[in-house]
Length: 247
Image (cartoon, rainbow, N blue to C red; front, top):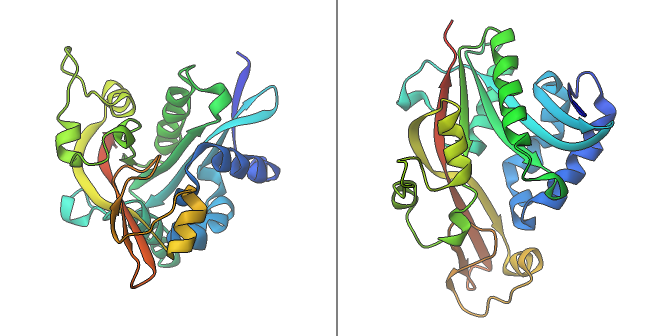
């Protein structure tokens, strides 16, 4: 097999290649999340053993990022979303709490290498890593890949769209279900990106001359622009799924 998967603990020099994959794969505004900007570099170093890098002939072409945290198994103890999971993971580490869950924060394949089922390979390896660490659950705040084509549709309605075989319409959500994931809850404000009007115009290449909700390429829901406050806010919804590994 021409692919290999290593951790950043094993090859920390791959960190910049991983960051470049993210820059080339996500909408620009999504990289401006305040929690991500505050913790991302620390995530890659302080939790390096949970950062997987997919290699093809020694070249990084994908990555999966995890953070361990303590979760008692109850919905009320579930982090609000991506941002909250990152903050809780670092807080739990500082308090020396034994983790019981691994949150899959991101799984990305370089655009030139998509369509080869490589995401499944990374996801399976992340689950195997959790089991080796004697962690009983893998939690993922899933970003449905096709939701950006239906930005005005509520996430709950979007997730209710099914194929003829009864599986979810969204291909990434469908992949998780096929691999054994169970729905837990909606994360209505999983990741929040805030910036000035000028920031949003720079990130999106659009002009926002009026206040209100604006559709932006790559966004799962509209961006709310307030010209009086000189502010734009994007609150991305995700959906929490759970892989119960036992133990």
